[in-house]
Image (cartoon, rainbow, N blue to C red; front, side, top):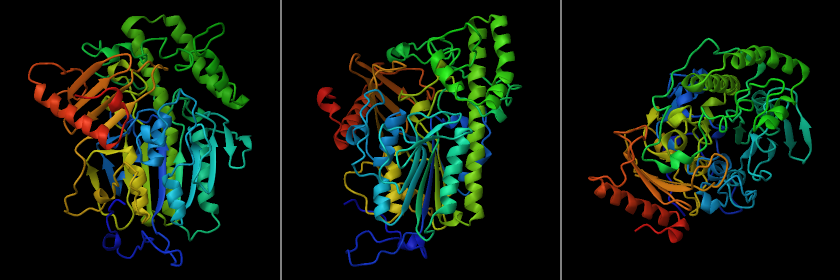
Length: 525
């Protein structure tokens, strides 16, 4: 078993269940509750605790005000389903078996997961919202989820008994309603709980609640400096299909809502299905807002850079409007926990399943190991006894959540979990914590939507080395200190030989440490 940090002194009068006890011994119930809020495609540059250029997220910022903000938080595979599998198991994709969204292979729910371990430690567990693993949740006492991606308006909800129901309203509100109702009506409130509140927001196609449709329409947002990137020296980036200014990538109807009679597009049928779920009142509000914008768009006949900038502004505004509902609902959860005096003994975690491009490199979506999609926000409200505050700069990864939750519950961390418990970073004080010096990443989903090539790589504090493989054999090297936007591929340039070899060696070590079978097919010399 992995050695774990002894919590007895640090948590003082907050005893946790013992790591090992005989069947005859009565375990003392752990005292820290866990509320794990996760969104989809919410990127750090659209969260004001990290970046104030675009978004104001006062309720999300509250989480870190009496806790911590992680400045270097990353995923193991920047794609929704695989990322969620990494989180729930604490293992990289090749170990948990869920590598991509395209194969149709369900997540193996029989394998160990942190909710199962928490159940065994006496926790009551629940998940509401997005599961997205082509399977039914396991390890939860209570669950209600959306099928697949779910719908923003009047969504279908799958109940634990297998029944389905359509609930009137806006999904972000509904997920919060279900979560708070469960908290309020738990039968045994002496038991600690682990509640997963997992939202569809901010996922494409960014359909705002009707009450927020008019927000931000008077604002013009700055284009990223590399919005018109030509991808020089980056072969894999050239073939990706994620450009905001390309109508074959970002759809004029599905994504930008410019539907008029007789107009069609590649994804129009998807949009028809989404707005077809609206009731008469919702549809009337939707049409009243969008119809004047649609009329102006088609009459203006924008072209070139002017059109590209118009598309960017519509994208940013819709994203922000969807985010407004999310932030408001996070505020509802925090208010409830405060009202019920639960904040002092509850760890509140906020993150996203990956980052997202908000026009950087001209893109939307994710998948690449470049910073905007590899990086993800991570905020934690810390309960009494965990004294770290402010910013944490160590590199953490989403495989670290599971062992963190286990250690907080007093559960010994199994040897096969590949993440590291973050708990030592949360203790506070002057003690220096030995931490990792590098992260490993592996993306598998190609060929698939958005045409991002398969790749794996290593990131250290300063450098990043990526290998695009399979139908391509391309390496990329970036100095993140000198080139944080990753515009200049240094691989093969004179003077980089030593750092390249160091990174190749470290990458090989990580593939061996995590037992990634790719090392046998594409051995690193």
